[in-house]
Image 1 (tube, rainbow, N blue to C red):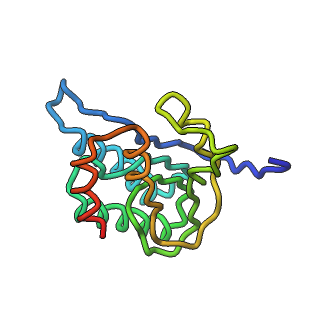
Image 2 (cartoon, rainbow, N blue to C red; image 1 turned 30 degrees about the vertical axis):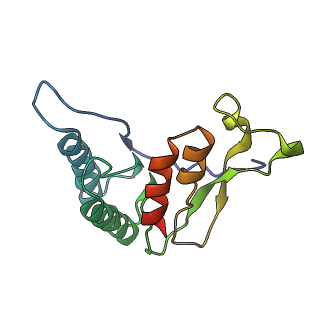
Length: 159
């Protein structure tokens, strides 16, 4: 980056990884929702915060998960909460969207293998106006040698 603007905050709320709380008997999802409550409570108390959430609702069913992500985004946008949320869900809510660039062109027709696949993936971020997420999972599954019978069955559901 050539320049940056740093905005001071009073608190940073982070929700990443699997946080199953064995001591309290909470599922990963319940623990995640409690962390989300912290951000909501901070917002309601007008605490200036930065909220970082990695793939919210990933441990619940996709239909509810997408609705949860939309609800979180809607609330944060309405209350002007500084946040960075990563998700695999296709979200139609108007907000700034970035995505991993993904596969790069195959240089010199080099064979892509499990050992070198990371050198063919550009993990840098780019702006996108799309509300659809990229579909590269099947390509990766083929490259790493997932059983052809399974791949054919998967393709039937994609088409």
